[in-house]
Amino acid sequence: MTETRPVLVATEAEDPTADRVITHLNRLGVPVLRFNPADIGDGLTVSARYGIRSAHAAGRVLTPSRTAHLDDVRAVYWRRPTWPDFARLDPEDARFAAAQTRHGLGGVLRALDGALWVKHPALNAEADYKPHQLALAQRLGLAVPPTLVTNDPADAREFVTAHPEVIYKTLRSTTYQRDGVPLAGWAEPVGADEIDDRVRVAPHLFQERVNKAYDVRVLIVGRQVFAVRIDSGLLDWRRDYSALTYSVVTLPTPVESALIAFIDTFGLASGSFDLAVDRDGSHWFLELNPNGQWGWLEEQTELPMAAAFADLLTQGGTP
Picture (cartoon, rainbow, N blue to C red):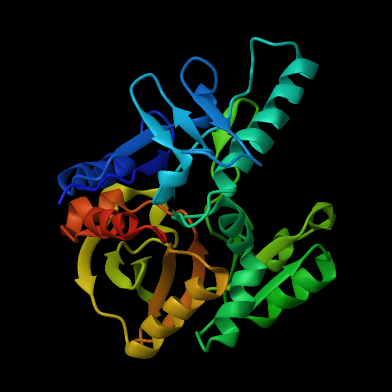
């Protein structure tokens, strides 16, 4: 049966991962309206009404090729959208227009009644705090490596000295440059002699290194759990994707149950977890990426990840 209630897909122009999900939605006969907030203007129009009772009173979202009535929307796939910078305007006008767009378009979408969000930006943001993640993981019974978040150099040196091996990790992945050279925030070993008063500038995350045998990336979509073993020999496997090998694994039941409870606690429909498995087979929680990449894992393993997202979006919210 052809579905008539549309799914909104908010993402940047080039997003192969979203393309995979949209392909499956098309196969299921589900209408899709794909848009990017950065296209507001000729490429994207939004119109919403309140305090008015009539057919399709809620309003609509339009692109040059598609129209979706807001009161028909079954689900919103908030994938990797970008917001407009209005570079053509002077700085003050651009700042004003950007704020109106975020609160106008963003507010209209957040007001959708009964639509399923995969994943709501406010919930994504709440789940993106690593200290919050670590505390929740510990409460749910997951193994968490000894970790210190501090901007106190003395505390940092004491922690590093007290553990056999310690790594430094960023509290949030942040794109930046130094002298025009792009820098990445990889996990790096750190020694007590490297810690000085620069630590006072901002909080830093120090963590005891897990003597890992391999890594596991876990994608949860609704109640479907996909776990992929990543072998690399690297401290941070993201450094060199060409050095990775993959295999599908099954998580211990207590670990799987705790990860499902984890996304439920944050109200998320899905999430990507990074775990480290040590030489004794223990699974250590490292972090949750609320909006993590998974497309390359589907390519490597043929796990039906995109189909799982399409099925979840098709279920949508309450009609």
